[in-house]
Picture 1: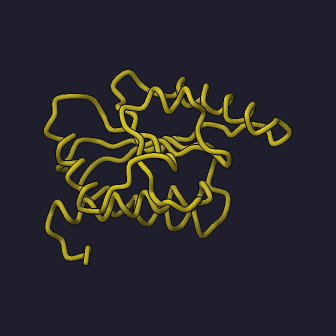
Picture 2: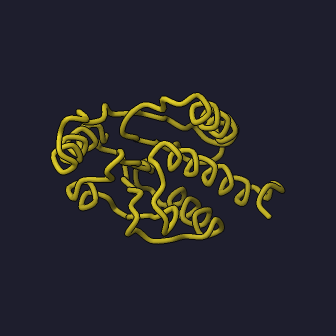
Amino acid sequence: MIGKPLRLLSVGRLKTVFWKDAAAHYATRIARWRRLECAEVRDGDAALTPERRTALEGRRILEALAPQDLPLALDERGEKLTSPQLAALLRQMDQEARGRVCFIVGGAYGLDEEVRARACRLLSLSAMTLPHELARVVLLEQLYRAECILRKVPYHH
């Protein structure tokens, strides 16, 4: 293992088989180079309003963060990075003597403002809205791509 461990903290379980398979595929590939912990918090009750649901999920996310976690939250208003820029960010965070990078993927209605405020950085995967299950898979693929860039493995074109 070369890089510092990474953590992926997500709201809800992957329920659809093809999202589970895709996430497992990329998590296995990433594990060749660094430890990856995938953790989930329970999503809010569907009967709640979107605001109350994201607030509840936000509390669960904040409670699940470990003291050493450096939260990077995925948010549609976040910074848009290219794949090489994400690789450079991972390299920079590996070189700093700080904690563990923890990517946060919200639920169906996004992230609560308290989670955004707690994040050391907001990142966007796309200007388009993505289902949260797909966002998790896209993030894992991009983390794998970043690892390939850092190691000069011919995956990124």
